[in-house]
Amino acid sequence: MNRLRTPASITVSVWKALILREAVSRLSTGRAAWLWLLLEPLVQVVFLLFIFTGFQMRFVGGIDTGLWLMVGMVAFLMFRRTGTQTQNAIDANRGLFTYRQVKPIDTVLARGALEGFLIIVIALVLFGATYLFGMDVAPDNPLLVVEAFLGLWMIGMGFGLITSVVGELIPEVGKISGIVMTPLYFASGTMLPIASIAHPYRDWLLLNPLVHGLDAARLGFAPYYHAVPELSMAYLYGFALASIFVGLALHNRFAERLIEQ
Amino acid sequence: MIVVDNVYKRYRTDHGPGKWVLQGVSFTIPRNLSVGLVGENGAGKSTLLRLIGGVDTPNKGRIERNCRVSWPMGFAGGLQPSLTGRQNTKFVCRIHGHVDDIHDRVAFVEEFAELGDSFDEPVRTYSSGMRSRLQFGLSLAFDFDVYISDEVTAAGDAAFREKAAAAFKQLSDHASIIMVSHGEGTLRQFCTAGIWLNEGRAHWFDDINESLRAYKKHQLENRLVDLVSKRPLAENQDQVELEIGKAEQQLMALVSLERGIAGTPEAVGHEEGKRIINEARNYGIQLLRPGEVTQLGHVIKPGAIPIVRTFIPTPQNRHVDLYDLHTQCVKAESAK
Image (cartoon, rainbow over all chains, first blue to last red; front, top):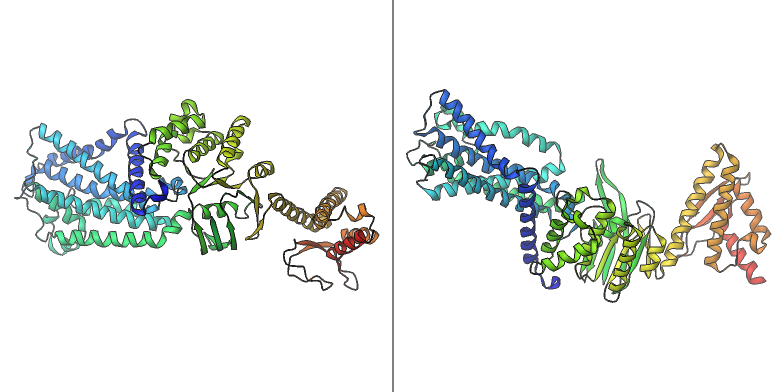
């Protein structure tokens, strides 16, 4: 049995076990944990929609404000939740490193996969609900939406892979990455159309790959949306792959030290 | 078979690399031989178990596991506090690749650990006894060739300890155990061979009793050194004096036993020995290890156990070695 297992099959069974373990604690610890998962993005969308309505802005970039906000918010969540959840994966599973089959990288990957899946479910519920309210939320180019969300998830993974290692080695980094999230939220175009920003500043904001991901997702829903003209999926994916590579390299280099602490 | 070859290990601290916990540890544990680890707190016993269990990797050296080795069962880790006992059990089954027969194994653990309804409560609510019962049951649910136990058998009430002992005895025909325990009885019960860890090195003994004796002797020596160095400042001189006398007696008895002498210098009526001990009491005592040279020019034989040297700074800077005392004792004994 054990003797015949290959390293690959051990890794796969560890991933399965970790994902189930994470899912249980994510969805069942505390009262109605699953409800809070759903409420956070919902409350934010409703709140912003309230403000935008107050400013009499019914359309942003040519599409309905509600849709614009909701797609941007869920897309940003795809990055943020994946990033912050994976960042804390190692500490949350420290007790399990007693089993030599479980490596720090496994906990990060399992959390990332689960979080991506959860966001997809949340997105389906949100969009399903708005459809029932009579809003046209069917994406025009579903493939582009998938592409954008996948890219954002990968950037979240890269972020989490890097910060999970660096945060263990230098604890202050964990706090800094928490601080960075709020400016990123504004600088990614969740509630501020980047396309409407004047020139030298827009170029700076476009260095942020999340801008590309968010606008691509919106473009996937509505082809007539005025996305930023410099939109580049290559930049989004290039950034994602580079950060994942750096994260994996860090995990490879510091694997032993992560377990020791 | 487990091969530990020239293993070095140290941990990182907040102030850079810490001191070496293990320095050049080498030994081979043959199949089906149960080994007990003894040593002081912080001697590296748990570290060595973690290395054998594959949790940590050595800084230098190599560890080979040519058999199925369990994880180190112990207080530290292995259970996720927020999950219930059942969920933890399922997790361990899954990472060990037992998905098809997961129900049988969970049922086994549930029955063995005797946690009752608590099995479905989060592990963080467990007492330490309940935790180790769960861990113990968990490890027994899988077929390993070698079980690693870090004090796990020590916890729990008497009835559970008996059950655990019975389970281990049943395993012993096809599996072995590497264990750390501060209970001498437990070690003697389960282990054949012994390893004494001291100052980063491992000393192998084919007989667990010998390793316990070596460890005890070392403790006595340290205690003696400590007492003597404290004596000048002590308030109750008489009490310290009494304790020194006691420690010396115990030590001499141990050394004598080792060297085949029937008793202490007093017991065998060795006048010179008595005089030296009395004189030594007034001065300092320190340790000599194999390979070191005594003040009288004797080299302590390799393999010999560290001995006590009295250090007497008289006007002539005279030194007397207890080592010589032992040889004289042996002579005195054989002359009879």
